[in-house]
Length: 374
Image (cartoon, rainbow, N blue to C red; front, side):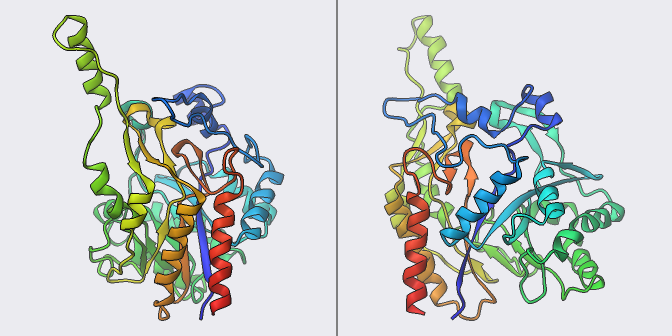
């Protein structure tokens, strides 16, 4: 019986970069949205506050060491660093990974998720503004991309499956439309550099019933949580931000009574009750979400998964572990956690001031239970 290996998505946007300074103001980081968040209704728990690690800066090596040690202590096998390569050599937020590679620290497994999507201002109400366009220009750029990744792939900490570096693709459709041969060329380059290929995994962005095998993927991250959640989101028991202002104008001119805007809110327990992991036509690894509230980024356009708790998260871990028990033919028992530190989406495994180590303890509890059963 293979050991369950939780991998947690890791956001590197906790240090200033020139582009964010230009777009959002000097010194912008993910903490900017977290700190300025406001409660949007009575009982809304915003802002949220970091716990043990405080408002950290990821340029500080000691912070990265603390995160890795904490993750290791509670059973997380490795981090999935978001990687931003927009084409034509354009990168963003690459400093953290570069520092990790150069320093050799922390001594903790990692891999990349290539977040191959265009950056727009949609998080901040500027959806028409393109900040960084995702393109796949030519073979030269593809090779340059691989050559950038190669030193990471060769690092002993980089997560591999049967001598194949693990690379997650955030948006398989976007890549397929932009360059359907990208993955096969990457595999060839990996073999030319001493690997047995690449182990390419599609993210949880797309449904599980697509033909990922013919798209060139070895595996995918389950979309089951979104599938369980969508029926609740689609009830649309809320007033949109734009509709609120239309109603407000009508109210001012005496046509309609002024109404307060409402946020889309769903109950976490209801979603988790409906959560059911299913296979696609490639090995499908379960994905669990400890919590979600992206109103710090999106305001009234955001979505809240309400009444979260470590106990409800524990139920998710148990479902995922039981699913993996029946997947003995999988090359690894990966359990994907979204996310380690997406604070402005209220999507965190790291300790916060309210729950402390509650979510980490829930993960460790179920992992220990299933390791004893092996």
